[in-house]
Length: 436
Image (cartoon, rainbow, N blue to C red; front, top):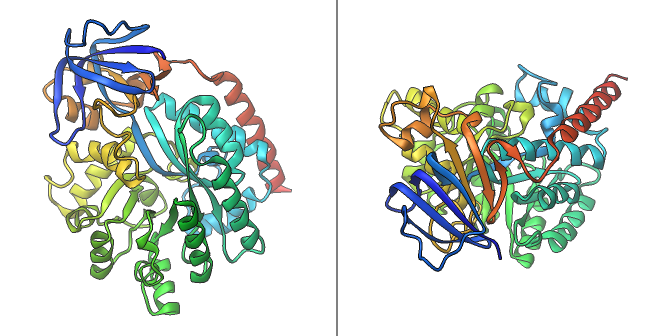
């Protein structure tokens, strides 16, 4: 197995103590970290096949994007400045009706290129034709948690459920363990409780979790409460959803009982601040959720409602949004926002013993940020610089499973020019078909 030595001016470990190592190095054997420490501390019998990084770099765990729809890169800026339901019903769903499996493939490939370039090493995706998304994960070298999205009230709802079961059986644990799977009932307003319960039974049988949109808008909160006499969160709690591993996207509109439920059950939540702002969905009570005991990571949502997959932007927005909405400058500090993008995101996906920290025994999912840029001088606090000043263009190197996917800003596992050209072709055709 290949051996990699990564050198950095600072290593932001994101471990339990918040350790930052100045002038450090990380030794990787195969897909795992076997040592980290000060420069020169790697055991002498470790002979690296490759050395990367340098004194101007900051190393940290790769970002964990807890909620996205990768192939929706093809819809980037196709439909902007609309509220969620109008956006979905009048623009997104009609466009998606014409999408082929090849469209899904090239849209997901474009997402993978963007994520590698912006330091994301793990992403949780919910969409259709997920076998093609799995193909992109296999080819590009990223890590992913994949869910076949299901609309329970649609005519093909029962078929989608069976397809999901077969998808999980076929792909869970594949790509050298880089692909995990979940069941993906879209939301309580598109999937009746009985449908979600069937997905839950399948998930229990296959020992996987549930990825679902939850309490995203005020309209959803009101409609569900009127229909069932319970909020979306309380409805899901009443059918036992939170007894399973759950990835709940959004959780914006919550009452005090909802927050208590999510905290007590330690539900994994994907906070998507930029999408929630763009669609005017609202501001999730992140600090209250964390205080209650919920586990909160970050997601970008799809590129059609963000409109990029930049986790550095996302963590900065998350921090600033909590500060301004609570009028408390101490809310969600830089270290906590970075934690949401790494360590806490890994917990949300049930991968806290594998990724999210730079630590011996963990998977070697590591990024290097080039700090030798005018906007990153002077260097007082590496974590604050990453959270508040760095941009995705500063990410120099991306490593997943011990494999270098990008070095010196050059992609090593995918032809970026081909991907961009193919994605544009697909998007052009889909726009024309939607107009016809």
